[in-house]
Image (cartoon, rainbow, N blue to C red; front, side, top):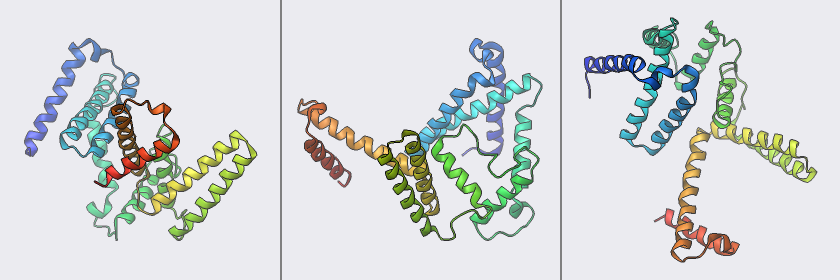
Length: 262
């Protein structure tokens, strides 16, 4: 591991390289905050993939790519006379100290849940434009993690189930409403009810300590692995999957599931 001095030197070198790229590279020189936006989103997802994969070298690479974007945005802002990377770091330090009074002001907390509740309360006091409980939830956030974040935020003010097992009554209610709209054949209402059902399932996952985004990604990967097995079996036998009977497809699926347990 690097010493603190070596870490600071590496950051300094990165800033120097960024200065050179903005001066000498035609592509880097043309970039704006808006032009970088989509690439930043892509880098965030690539980092999430690396974290799920659990590969340290992959994670390190993707963290570097994301750090480049942070430095890039700060450099553009510096050129515009708005702020620089030092201002970004200083503001972050001030926020972290302010939101951790149990560390810096000897304010006692009982557990991690209380830390989260205090964090949200302190955010409400800050004069940063977040004047309501949910105003800090990014509008462009993907729907699944956004639903979880909404539920987490409102729970900090007590808007939550008094007992987590009660959430299953809500899930059952939403399933019944989806089924009713299927019978009514109203496409708009069916979409709305499916949304309510998904929101309630996300809420259930949260209450039982499960990250719904990670849980769904785990299932995605499991499905891809199993379906890949099915495809490989049909390729080996030279039989197009499209022509197989449902019964044969189910047999292959059960074989793929059995491979998970080996």
